[in-house]
Each structure stands twice: as C-alpha cells, then as structure tokens.
Length: 80
Image 1 (cartoon, rainbow, N blue to C red):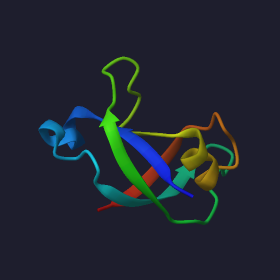
Image 2: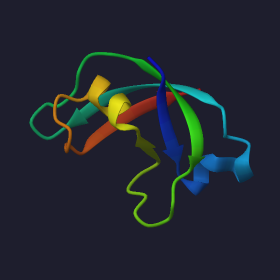
Image 3: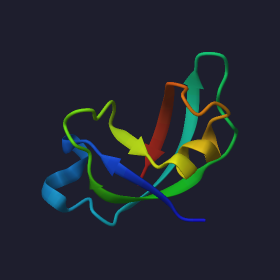
Image 4: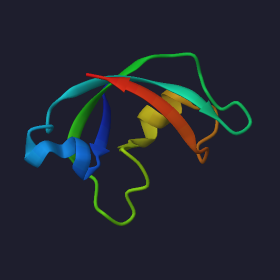
C-alpha cells in the first residue's frame, strides 16, 4: 500500500521535499493509540497553513496504519 503525507513549511524546503520518502512510526499519545509498525510515506504537497496541525499531516490510510484511533493526537518519529 502507498501512504502519503503533506508537510509543514519547515520540511517543504521550497518544494524540494515533494516526492521524498520518510519512514515513520507512532511514538506516543493519549490512551496508548500506537500500533507497533513502521511505514514509508511519500510527500505529495505542502500542508496549508490553516489547519496544518503539525509537522506532517498523514493521509487517512497512513494514520490508520500506525494508530488504533482515527482522531487520536499522536507523536511520531520520522527519518528520511
């Protein structure tokens, strides 16, 4: 399965981030939402300033792959 994210201006790098792949996993969150899984995600766009809630905004499928709860606020660890 292909997973996608949009990224904040800090990661966007004037468009150079488009197409980059990151490995990420859920680290923590309220009520232990994390699924012990590492996924690869592809950057497809810049996250709009409002409402870009974080460094990365994951697609629904990507989020479901690493969190048990669809509306959880989670902390992630990512690496290129």
